[in-house]
Image 1 (cartoon, rainbow, N blue to C red):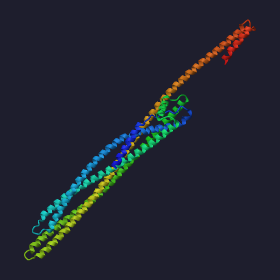
Image 2 (image 1 turned 60 degrees about the horizontal axis):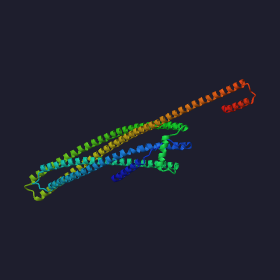
Image 3 (image 1 turned 45 degrees about the vertical axis):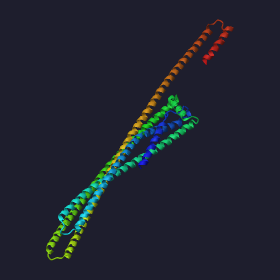
Image 4 (image 1 turned 180 degrees about the vertical axis):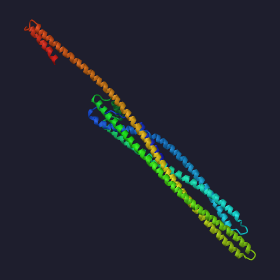
Length: 462
């Protein structure tokens, strides 16, 4: 798993470097031809979405750094676990030695004679060995429990990291397919141009822009895109808030339920273990009392029958006492096994509590990731709205300048029309004066003047 994780990390880094090298400017303005407005406006939304997704993908570099740190931490934890396992093996060897010593003492107890038998000293040694072995076993069980919990936590973290890497890889493949489709679309529109020429042409169109009715169309499309982005942002925000509230409620319910269940289970297990421990202690006390009574009886019989008993009877009596001692030792061992079984049940309850705590921590981490995604989406939506508002302001300014220029042209046209009317009226007045005041109206000169007047008047009227 570690090797596969390393390979996926290197592949993801290489793809990110290639994407950084192939990064280009994506235009927000369509072609100047009016017949291609609809196709390009449809492509603009996909281009804007692609730019936002590529910007989101660039944040995976931080996730790669975090994965490297987690891998280093996992290596350190593995080293610690190996050291701890070595320590547990040493403790296991110590326990085996103590068990061998106790078995040896029991054998000596069984094989020793009545004259060489110090019962009190042997019982003290057995009690000391039992206490030492019990302490070592408890310590080793606690350490083994901690090691198991640490292994469970590390495996969960590793699975979570693998799932995140799988999601990032799927997301990267989707982005690459979208980019290939967009490049194919641009290649269809410009079949004979190279990629650099296509990009330079798109940048020039982005800088030059459109005029007249095209600006009005772009303005309306940008306003619609801004409204859609704001509505999407509001919907996403409401959805994330609802999901966060629902997750918080579920986490609270799970925590309360698990705590109550664990508390009940622990109380019942504790009461049962205390009751059984008390019963076993009573049994041990009773067995010790029986052993004491038997030893006293043995000593009494030995003192009573020593003068007139033979060796066979003494051997028979000693064998009987040895069998009773073995039976008592077996009963003591059975009681110890029962205690160990109860301790195992208690450890199982502790592991269940640890699993519930891990589940709660996982839910809290999921809530944190959802909050981070909500903040990232709000930030991206704010940036998109700022960019669209800036482009809309630029278009409004250019439209205002065009409207001013059109108004100036209209004013100039009105002044020219007024000047033409004034000249026409003046020419008409001059013609009337000439007709009324001239003495030779029917002369050839007057006719020539009228023809010239009419020839000058026709263009004026036109």
